[in-house]
Picture 1 (cartoon, rainbow, N blue to C red):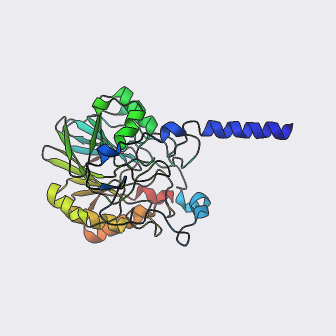
Picture 2: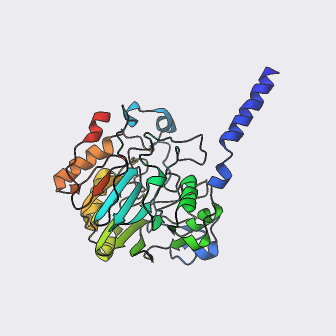
Picture 3: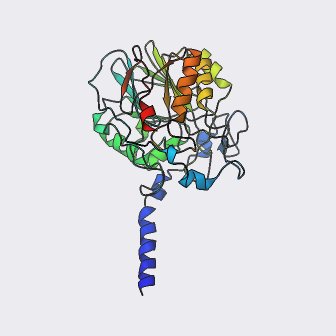
Length: 357
C-alpha cells in the first residue's frame, strides 16, 4: 500500500512539474507563410552553410553538463544594480543578465530577448536555474516601443515574460519568421506581432528594427528549425546598436557592417561556447573578431553570468574577452546585471566578476 501511494505521489509530482509544457512549446508556424523566405526549404530554415548543431558522443558528456564543474557557478552572490533614473537623451544600454537588455535612444526604448523566469525550460520546476536574481522587475521598465526576439530557444524567448509584457505594455513584438505562432498561442494580439526575414525592417516610434543574419538553429522541442533565428540592428536617428543573438562566427558580419554600420555599440554573445558545438556559439575571441568585422564602437558582452549552459568556468568568457579587447584596443564595457551603460561614457572595466570565481 505504501509503495502504491508513493508511486501515485511520484506520478502526481511529475504531472505537476510538466503541466506547463504543452503551452510552453508554442505554436506551429504556417509552412506557406514561411516559404516566402529563400532560407526555407523542405519544411525547415537553413543556414547559409551546413552546420553541426548536435554534439557527438566523443566531444560531449551529458553527465559533465548536468552535474560537473563547481567552477561553473559564482562562488558568492553576483552583485546586482537597481533601476537608474529615467533618461531622455543619449544612448544607454541596461544589461539584465544573459542576453536580456534594454536599449534606450533619446528616451525611447527597445527590449531584447527578455527572460525574467527562474528557469530556462519548458517547465517552471525543472531545467537550468538562475545563478542570480533578476536585477529589476518588469514594472521598473520605462515605456517600451518594441520587444525584439532573436530566436525561440528558452533562454531567449520566455512565455511568462511575454505574457506579462503583453498585459503591461503596448509594445509590438518584432521577431524572426515563425515566432509569431508561439506568440499567438500565448495570446499576443496579431496586431502586435511583426515577423521578418533577414534583411527586412520594421519602423516603430522612430526606431528602425532590421532583422539580419546569424548562424544558429531553433526549436522548443525535438522538432528543429521550423522558425528562423536572427541578429538585429536597432537604429534611431543617428544612433545604432547591433545585437548578435546566438550564433557561430561566420563571414556575414562584414556584410552586415557594410550595410548597417558602423555601430555605436554591439551586444555580442560570448558565453556557452564549447568544442562540441563550434558552429553555433562563438568563443570570446571569435566575438571580438566579429565585432571588428562589424565596425563596432563599444563592445558589451552578453550571454553569460546568469544560466549555466556551457562547460566552461563561470567567469572565463569575460576574462578571455577582456584580454582580447586589451590586446586589440577594443572599447569594452562589462556591466553588472541591472547596470545601465552610457555608451558615450562607459567608464573603465573594473574586473568585478573576478572576486566571484
